[in-house]
Length: 461
View 1 (tube, rainbow, N blue to C red):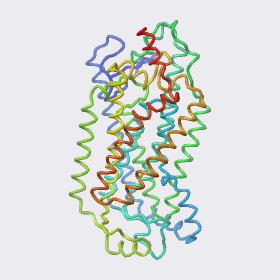
View 2 (cartoon, rainbow, N blue to C red):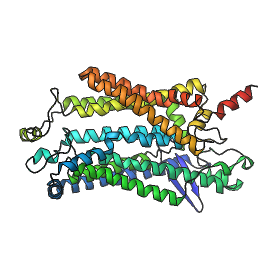
View 3 (cartoon, rainbow, N blue to C red):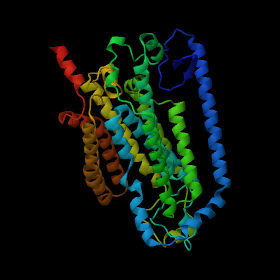
C-alpha cells in the first residue's frame, strides 16, 4: 500500500508489490479498505470491458470477414515479397525495445518489459488455442492465397495483442520524467510529502538536480505518435498478408490493452519503485511458484485440449503449405512456454548479482539497478555516445551469437522433445547472460557506470 499526497488532495494507489508502510501515521485499516475498494473497482471495469469487446468481436465476425476479403482478393505475388520483408516480427523487434530499456532506462524496467512481453505471448496462446479460430486462407482458398504459411489459429491476433506493449516504453519514460520533475521542484518542506516511497531521504543540500535527464512533453508526444504508427503498421501487415481477419486483429489489440491496464493500473508495476524490486529479489519463491503454476496450467491445457482442424481447412491449407510430419497445432503453446525459461534465467542472473556482486546489500543493489541518489546507478553518468554503443553491442551479441548461431543450429538439427529441452536451456542461458554475464563484460569495457564499486574501494581505504 502506498499513499501519494498531492496539493489539496489525497489519492491512494494499490499495488501487489508495495510495502504496507505509509508516509503519515494514518489508520492502516482505513487505507487497506480503500485500496482494496479501488482495486475491486478496477477489476470490475476490466472484466466488463473484456466481456463487451469479446461480444462485439463475436457478433461482428461475419461482417468484418467480408471487409477483410475485400483486401485479400488482390493476388499480386510481388506484393507478398514486399510484405514479407516488412513483417517486423520476423526480426524479433521485442529485443529492440528490450535493449533500449537496458541502455537508456534501468535494469528493473528491462526485467519488467521482458516478463510482461513473455506473459502476454503465453496468455494470447492460451486464448488462441482454446478458441481455435481459422485464418482467411483456411476458409477461402479459391479467393485467398497466403503470403506466408501459418498453421496456428489466429484469434486474438498474436501480433496485435503483443504490439500494444510497445506503449510500455512511453509509460516508463513518462514515469521517469514525473519523478525527475518532482525532485527538481521539491523544497525541503515538500520533500517529505512528495516522497511517497521513502526513497529521497538525503538532505536538500545534497539534492543535485542538475544531473537528472528528463524528456520533454513534446518529445514524449512525438515518441507516442511514432509508436502508435508502429503499432498500426505491424498490425496491418498480417491483414495484407492474407493471414488474419480484421476482427481478429481488433480483438488482439483490446486483449493486449486489457493486459497492459492490468499490469500498470491494477498490479501497479513501476520501474522506479525500489521496494518492488527489493521484494522480488528477497522473495524468490514468488517468481518460482508463479512460474511453476503457469507451466502446470499450460501443460494441463495442452494435454487435455482436443482441438483439430476441419478436413476442409486442411485441404485448403495444403494447396499452399506443407504440413510437418509431426505437426500438432497445440505445440504453439509449448513454443512460448520456452520463453518462460528466459524470465527464470534473467531472474537467476539478478539474484546472483545480488548475492555475489553486492554481497546481499539490498539498498545498494536496488539503487544501482533501479535509480540512484548519488550518481552511481547503472545508467547514471553515461553520455549519449556510450549508451548508443552499449545498445548496438547488445544487438550484435543477440543477433550474431544467439539467433544466428545457437538458435538457428538447434532449430535445424534437433527435433521433438530434445529440441524443446535444448531451446529451454538456451533461453534460460540467454536471460542469465544479459542480466549477469553481459553486465560484467560491459563493466570491463567501461560501458556501464561502476562508480558504486569505486565508492566501496574508497571506503575500504
